[in-house]
Amino acid sequence: MLMLIAFTTTAQAQGVFPDNGSWYRKYHSIAWGHGGEVLWDITTYNTYWINGDTLINGNTFYKLYDGNAFAVYITTDSLKVYCGEDPGNLRVLFDYGLETGDSFEFYGPDYPYGTLNQTVNMVDSVMIGGVMRKRIHFQNFECYGSGPLLIEGIGDVHFGGIELNYSYVAWYANTTTLLCFNSNGTNIYGECTTGISYSNPAPRVYPNPSAGHIGIDLSGFSLPVTVTMLTTDGRLTGTWKSTDNRFQIFSRNKGIYLLVISDGSIRSVQRVVIL
Image (tube, rainbow, N blue to C red; front, side, top):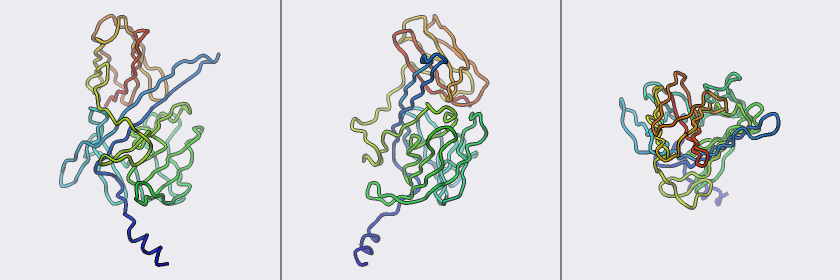
């Protein structure tokens, strides 16, 4: 009993969100035609990272970046983590107060089959990085094969650590993997040995996020270039050919999209956000 008391008194408590950290993620999507041919096979990498904080109306907000681009503000209130592009209009990203049998709706505005309201199957704890962390297991997404797994201070480790839009789970062959999570220069979860780069993507897509008007710098490609726009669940929204180094797209449909840019020998895939 004395040994147990000694252990529990030295164990550290874990906050619901880190004040310093980066999540290195891999996204993969593949689809096949009726004849078994590959329609697309896309792999992209991105890094979400905390770029300081700011005080707004007396509340502290972390600034989450996707590479070099601002993504969302994040703040906490007790056991809940909130996020949003506008600090005055937030949604719940994580709720670490959930217990077995509770339900939580994951954000998926483009999910075509209703809401992503998932039930907690089990709650336990796990020691990671010398810290005891609450772990919340959810039921699988319908027809997908896995469900969210929240770990305090890290995020949803089944869906990239931080997932701002779960709409892509409509197609089982869309996956986002959390390769590693780092905090204060220390690897906490997963394995990343080469470090994380925040280099500008090529080609440059601007502005991103956008109000609907998107410019693409194609100077690194051989002309003509094919530009294809897909939703995150793989639906084609448009395809164009450009014979100029500057190309523009206008879309009135809000959401997160994939731009596949190819000249036949070079292919780049960029995520764009239309607000």
